[in-house]
Image 1 (cartoon, protein in one colour):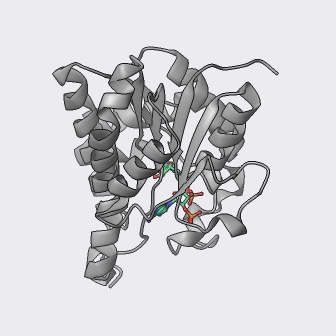
Image 2 (cartoon, rainbow, N blue to C red; image 1 turned 30 degrees about the vertical axis):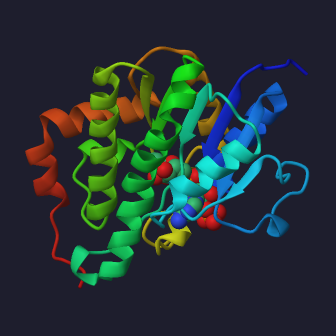
Length: 250
Ligand SMILES: NC(=O)c1ccc[n+]([C@@H]2O[C@H](COP(=O)([O-])OP(=O)(O)OC[C@H]3O[C@@H](n4cnc5c(N)ncnc54)[C@H](OP(=O)(O)O)[C@@H]3O)[C@@H](O)[C@H]2O)c1
């Protein structure tokens, strides 16, 4: 095993892309801090050990405080890579989405990364490290039925760009496209609407993310197809909106 001397913090490490990233960096021998909301007793005991696992619900305002306290307890004095990957969503019209759900979605996808970035800023700076924000290619595409999700991802990208401009720490926004994870079912999609079987696996996407992290591109869109969609969304957004417009599913 190669020994990676870096300390890597990953949020949303209990499933999907985050779990695949955790396994990737564990294989590299990095020092890991894994953040998730599930109790440790429900997780794979080989990867999730008490000195590495911080249980924190990122929809709650005290999440950054919990992570900070954990880092102090464990004597973590630097973070080389802070990967803010946790995310949640909702499939359906805005009118059909409960306001408490909207609040939680915005909290996990946007407020959580902002709070954690602020809490971990000095540790990342000390390591001359990098803040990595996992956005989505949907941020520049018209996405009826994903309106709040897409808005949080667009705002996260903007946060990343402006944080980078402030200097002090390096920031990278990485935008995956559709990936085969449990997210789709969690947000209420069914295979009749979208069959996610053909999407790349969490492991494939995690490898692409890890590779992108070694590079210096500030905003990195994963995959040729997704780069094409991004261009399409940016320059032909009006046209696409017309094509995708449909009556609201309230
Ligand atoms: N899948 C895609 O098609 C796709 C495409 C583009 C971008 N992305 C982005 O990629 C990232 C990872 O998504 P994924 O597909 O791997 O989804 P996933 O399999 O559902 O994993 C999401 C992770 O975030 C955690 N999480 C959700 N709410 C949380 C909360 N309140 N507090 C703490 N942790 C919470 C989940 O915890 P639990 O295990 O407890 O649910 C899980 O560990 C997200 O930011 C997502 O927006 C995904």
